[in-house]
Every structure is written in C-alpha cells, then in structure tokens.
Length: 421
Image (cartoon, rainbow, N blue to C red; front, side, top):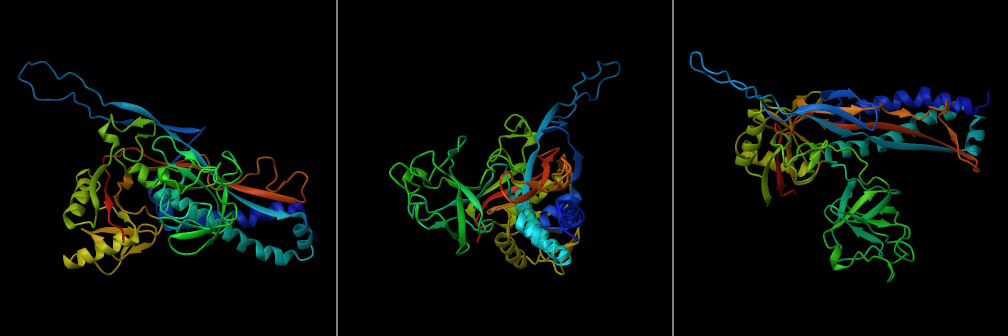
C-alpha cells in the first residue's frame, strides 16, 4: 500500500492529535494545573469579553424609625476585554521522504508518534513558560553583558538564564526602552537589515553562542556594546513580541508590569491590583511571607498554593526548618502533583520556568482560560498537509488560540525583589 498524501493526512489526525491533546492536558506542571483549576470560557472573535465588578454596593445602613431609606449605590461594573492570542507549532516533510515512506508504512507509522511527541514537548514547554512567567511581551530573558562585555557581533551571549533558550531557536534582540521597545538590527550591512539570529549552542546556564558570529557589527549597525543599551537588552523568540499569553506575572501584579490589564486601568481601580510586598533584593523573611499569606487568606481564599522558583523555594525550606514549619511527607496537590515544602499548610510550588525573584500567592478561584480552540491541526481547507509552492515538500501546523485571565486581582498577593540564588 502506498503512503500517499491522503493517508499522511489521516495519520496526522488519527495518531498525532490524541497524542498532542493528552500531552496538552497532562504535560508541563503549571500549565496542567491551570487547565484543571481555572474556569474555561469559550471565546469568539479576537477578544473575549466579561463584566467585572470593581466596587461594592453601598445602598444599606441603619435608620431611625420612619427615616429616609439609604440611597441606592450599585456596584461599579465594567466590561473587560481579553485579547485572544495564537500560538503555533509546525511540522514539515519533503516529498522524497513521503515517497520513501511508501515502501515501509509500518516503520513510518511507528516513527510518527515519537516525532510528534518531540514537537509537542517543545511546544508545551514554551506554553508553560507563557502561563507561569509570561507578561504578554514575549521576553524570554535579558542580556546582562550589554555595555560591559562582548557586543552581539561576538559569538557568545551572556544572559540572565538560558532555561528557555534552545539550540536552533530563532531569536530577536530588543532595546527595551520603557513603553517603546525598539528592535535592534544587529545583522546585515546597515540598520534595517536582518534582525533574526539563530542560537547555535547552549554553553552554560547563563551563556549561549550564535550561528551568526562571523557577521560582526559594523559602523552602520547598532552595537549592543554601547553604554546606552546597558541593562536594557531583551531577547524574544522571533515574531513573538506582544503576541504571547499574559500569564501569572500579568494577573498577580499591582500595575508595575501591566498598567492596563484586560482593558482596565489598574491605577484607577484598586480591585484590579494585586497586593505587592517589596523585598529590595534581599532574602525573604518569615514576617513578609506571613503578610503575603494573610492578605490572600483575608480575601477569602484560605490556603491556596504558593508559586516561585526553585532557588527561592529552597531558601524558604531552610527558613521554615529553622522555625520548625518544614512539613513532610510531601503534600498532594490537585492534578496529582506533590510538593515537599508548605507554609502554614499552603503548598509551595517550584517551577524551573517561574519568574525569578518573585513569590506568588495567587487566588486560583478567579483564574480563567478564554479560548477559541484547543490544540488543533489547521485543516479547515480539508487537508492537514499543505504543499509548499514550487518546492517538493509539505508542511502542517498546529494552533492554540487562548488567553489567561482573571475576574479579580486584589485577592492575590506577591513578594517582589527577592534575592534568588
């Protein structure tokens, strides 16, 4: 039996989609938890809309016998708009490979799930990053040697972390001027030339090399070694700027990261602001942990969970051990996950991709996922595989149209500026 285009399409649907959806539901930890605990809302169009309460009704009060009744003061209700964003992952195959597979259908059918799993693992890891550390900007990490080290014309780039940098990734460098980021055309003969750079290899937890190292900066290029760019260079996956999911740092925020959240200005409405406890670059202390915990507890949530990086989780473990509050055995969480450290009974959830220097106390009861679709092949034209015009090859792509949101922000709290070792 020949493995023709029709059967390739069927195989991608019948073999790949169940595998992908299973991984999507059970994959990376934080994303899996959010999908189990958040309220899922189907959205239509480019924006999801909901009515949120930003005030408390005040038409009540005690009165004397026969006195004037309280004047009605209704809740302040506003419509919020949640932008739906699209994430994609692609799959390609040449015509020659397809024809060669025709002679051994069974071997190809065995190889397909493995390839799909590898593609999906990478896709879901990036989705998890957006859900737990994304603020919608698309920033993956920051260059830390700009102004003092090697310019981007050199082969090695030093960054805050390479956790989410991968070999073969196409990236862009941006000069992150507050409110007006500018892409840096650090490749090509002149400003305005190519801006996309390929990651060649990860050399350490904080360094990677680029494949374009021979194209050193010229006098007409923007040189990242210039002092004007010190501490202001951000790295973004190619094409992703402003198009990513607004995750935990955007929802649990007082307006420092996102001033206007879901089209509502946080500076105007306190109900739309999470409570921030700043640390100023020092290690977290027991008193601040208690304040952040108590804020969420007084908002009516109770224990909930605490989300942070492994470095801070380990600091807290030592701190609580000294206070004899280190709880063991591990606490089981919804979704089948466990954590060995708790604070006042609240599980402390550590993630490799979590935002550094921050401890989040989210009110999971207000978390939402607005979605137009679950992970799905683009087959609206009747075919999963698309022919690439004038080339002997085909490609397919998956899409996930969604956005993370919240119906309230002031019931959550966070500790910012924590020394993260």
